Image 1 (spheres, rainbow, N blue to C red):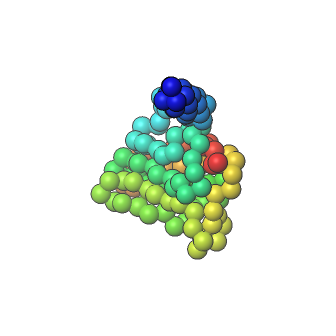
Image 2: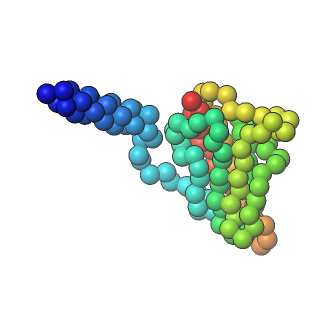
Length: 129
């Protein structure tokens, strides 16, 4: 008999966990990125923890400037072989040393490194909770 209550309780916890995941998850719609941007993280509309960082994967041959809430990020980590830019707030950063809860806007301004110019930009928002 008492096992029945345990199973019912576990079932309710499972249902609550699934509902919570659906409520806080992204919309699930695919993101259309401009040609030179291959991937971004976090995705538009995502809810991320305060420890989250930003990642922008560019095609090889493109450079990018990343703006966080209107501030140009100077201390990105760039992996030249893959074209990936990474950044996360840190105590040493003079402008943004931690994520504040709420919505944040990321803007990527890109152009080719060599050859004909191919400038562009992409902007999205996500939430920190």
